[in-house]
Amino acid sequence: MKVKKAKNFQAPKGMHDILPEDQKYWRYILKKAEGLLEDYSFEKIETPILESTELFLRGVGETTDIVGKEIYTLKTKGGDELALRPEGTAPTARAYIENGMQVRPHPIKLYYVEPMFRHDQPQQGRYRQFHQLGVETLGDTSEAVDAELLFLAHKILESIGLHNYNVHINSIGDQNCRPIYIRALKDYYKTKAKKICAQCRVRVKENILRVLDCKEEICRDVIKDAPQMMDFLDDECRLHFKHVLEFLDEAKIPYILNPHLVRGLDYYTRTVFEFIPDENASSQSSVLSGGRYDKLVETIGGPKTPAAGWAMGLERLILALKEKNVNVPQIGIKPKVFLAQLGDVAKRRSLLLFEEVRKAGIEIKSSLGRDSIKGQLRIANKLGVKFALIFGQKEAIDGTVILREMDTGVQENIPLEKIVDELKKRLKK
Ligand SMILES: [Zn+2]
Ligand SMILES: [Zn+2]
Image (cartoon, rainbow, N blue to C red):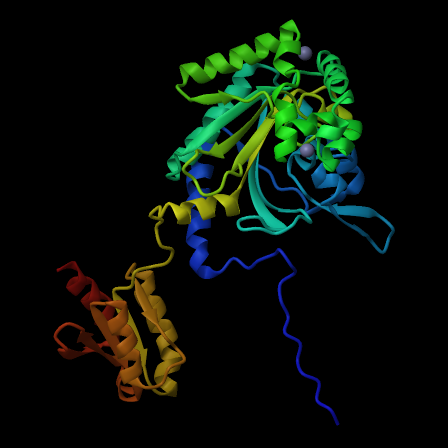
């Protein structure tokens, strides 16, 4: 009989494990970010990983990359068309409507930390399952909201030790003034079909704003002379944008006016922004992006609700932290005592002994599986503990434990009921 070789399973392409040694980065970022968010009265929300596909088609838009090309969809046994969430804003807006949050005092300030899914070409720092921390402020049209969101984004990045970002900002107008701009842009591109890339030729027909952020060399030349939204903003949009910038000036947050920043998603109105690493960074992809989306809640069936938000990619931030060698605190205890044990009786009792010492607030480690005392003391040495407790068959029967001072090797037999006090006394010295 042929023995079939066991299959070597791998994580799906573009998806990754987050190993113990990387957890410290996650905890570090989230501790800093969530602390700030709570100080600014943002409350956490969690939404399901799966949503109706229709929510993203209508909310984010069929012609966007993340829905048109990259969305993961599935059909359930019951026949529902569901999608793995590619972004967090549409689900948050859906939750806002479904849970009747419109009756709560406004604005509603929410944040989420969740995995997202996009069937994109994997690259360094870019995964098909990745994590975003996002914030959304719903129910307020004022420019103070945009400013607070930008300020907070800046503060969060600063607090984790990343300073080298430029804030690129633009206004893409609203349903009142944008159509006039789009007409002007279409006119301009009418004669340019031969001078742009194949993808942009499709974009001109489907979602013309997207031509503005094309990275192809030949397209850059055409974009340079294209009409700019800034010149088409109506009075209300112009004033809104002006006020956002005044807030930023006041808060001393430097920014770059980028007339070609449009963002890929249909739901944006007025302010859009991205935080892009400065020229010295190895990667120029944005770590944080967002904007105002005054029409989204209505588009997916809710009441008129102006809103704004942003999201940052946590894997990319972690990459940046590693590149910059930012000092991140370790997770886990630094033990002062190591518990070594030998023999069945001692091993069984050592579980309780360990707990007694731990409960007293003394950092302790042990390795329950190992049998030779020598091997265990070697681990104790490596850990740099001050004391080892040696608990063998004889000690277990006598109700004692050997206390060994690691530096000197001096050992002493101590009754079990006194060991916690003895450790406390000696560790105080
Ligand atoms: Zn307008
Ligand atoms: Zn192009």
